[in-house]
Structure formats: structure tokens, C-alpha cells
Amino acid sequence: MNRKKLIILLIGMLLVIGATILAVYLHSVSDYKTKVANINITDIDLSKIPDGTYIGECNVDFIYAKVSVTVKNAVITDIKLLEHKNGKGKPAEAIIKSIIDKQSLEVDAVSGATNSSKVIKKAIENALTGIK
Image (tube, rainbow, N blue to C red; front, side, top):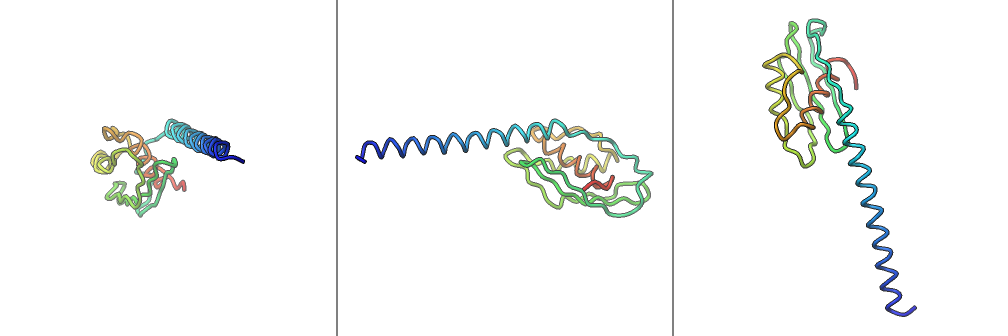
């Protein structure tokens, strides 16, 4: 095989590999967007939560949160963000203070970190409802 044909073959192979990687990535992004769009957060009746510390998590691939939520006398006394993978977006840790202050998951998302805010809130809900 002459050199010109070999170069054309290599370029063709690289293009096919690149297109495949791009297709897989775009599919992953589409799945991620669907998962985030399908997150439904329901406020929790804290009077039904026994005192204790609960662990919850939420994973939508590009964003992941694991939290520890402490409840005492029907009050959220502490939320610790044990793990938070937030991709390229701004971190949404500030939402934790809002949830504790309001004693509710019905708080506004952190500006510039909407998806991370949803994932953290869902992890908290999962902790309090026992969903792994």
C-alpha cells in the first residue's frame, strides 16, 4: 500500500472514531437532560420523620450528590453535603442553608446552578424518604 492510501485510510479511521465518540457523548448529554427534567421534588412532612440522621443520594450522571440530613423534633438541624459532582456548572451548596432556614424543599434553585440545586434537593428528599 502506498503512503498516500495509508494516510487516507488513517484519516478515515480517525474520522469514524471521532464521530463515534461524539455520538456517544451527545447521547449521554441527552440522557442527562432527560433525567434532570424528570426530577420531581415533593416537600416532606417533617412531623412524620423520626429523630435521626439519614443518608440520601441522587445521580443524573453529570451531577451527583450524597447528603446526610439530621432531624430532631421535626426540625432539620443539619445537612451535610458528603459528595457533590457538579460538572461544569456552578456549585449549588448555598441551597442547603435555604432548606434549613425554610425547613422545606420548596426553595428557589441557586442562580446558575439549577440542575445541581435539583439534584441536591432530590438527594435530601431521598434521605428523608428512605430512597437509595
